[in-house]
Figure (cartoon, one colour):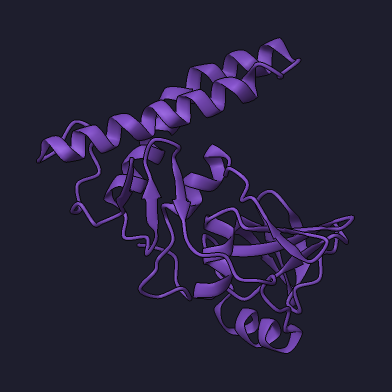
Length: 210
């Protein structure tokens, strides 16, 4: 079932749902996220880490489902698979180092959600990350490490930070990727990425949600 993702109000409490349609959407998202995470956790070799992740899993799944269901993301939502759908561009977003520098010199803030291009052999894909530290003409993303304001990865040379835009964040949120310079099947976002994607301030990409 593919449904248009619409704003469902400002309520953030899982138990508060106004319509049967909202309840169904929330349940479908929880089911999709549980299936996704169970498949990932099966491969976790560290027993202590597995127990910690299992303990916190219900909280993060319920939060992600609530953010997605209540969000205003401008995409079509495939609720049964817990993914967003949008027409994919023929090529990845362009890297503009000058635009990156101008943007991050002015708007870099802790909590801002940003798109990152990853190059892996002949594959190009986009990821979502968030800024958690600022330095002199550089910033640190929670998962992908340090970048200079031009967008160059200082820890991962295969990573390139982009200026947040509708085009770059759409590609990142919808899992768009390219193989040998051609479009290929979108990837499924991790639960962490779904949490971040559900927190994007689409009305003002320069600012984190309050």
